[in-house]
Image (tube, rainbow, N blue to C red):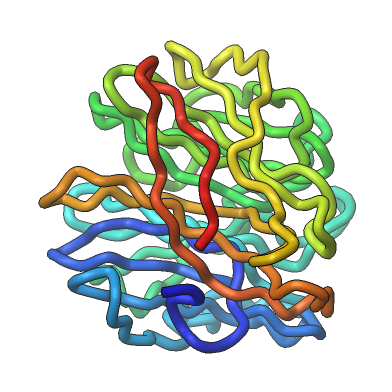
Length: 285
């Protein structure tokens, strides 16, 4: 039943680690400068959720003063690496961008891996926000990210401390922010959010390719507002049920008529594929 948890949360990233679903979220406040840590929720059945508050040890990030949001996580060699956005920087003169922390457990505490941001500059016009980590079948870990209408991708090095490939712009049609990758049956399903996150124009677009770098040339809408159920659905993650194989999309949305900036709720619905292996439009419940 939606929302899946009580309270205002946004930007969910979902993984299945150590026999549980883990959803990492932005604390969604009307005053975004109060968003100074990240929460997570865990569940063994995808129905009942346990909250894990303030999972980052922020003492390792003394330059962060405005906000943190949009977490993404990946497991590598038994450790968990969390990337999140900080400070909403507008130029290379400001410190912040994409930060990285690591922990031995999916609930943290996550400690700073570097003494500086992982990505603290603008490349190809992309604001360094809204990261998404994707591990391919060969173990290669890709970092997708970007705001201001531009999306970049690069491979992370084995130590997770930097990039081992050059930054490549892969901006698809209509891209605004919040990239998300799903690989199924050898096909790369790339999704992103478009529209304005503060109103009903926010929605999720999608393109499929045979390569993690694209090209992602078309744009099909798979999640949009329904005035009877919710407005502005977007900035999502996904998970597959390890027993049934069913796919689910986790996303935030707004109650009809409520457009206060912080009033976003976490929701979950089925993610279905058609006979051609393409993602079908999501039916919000």
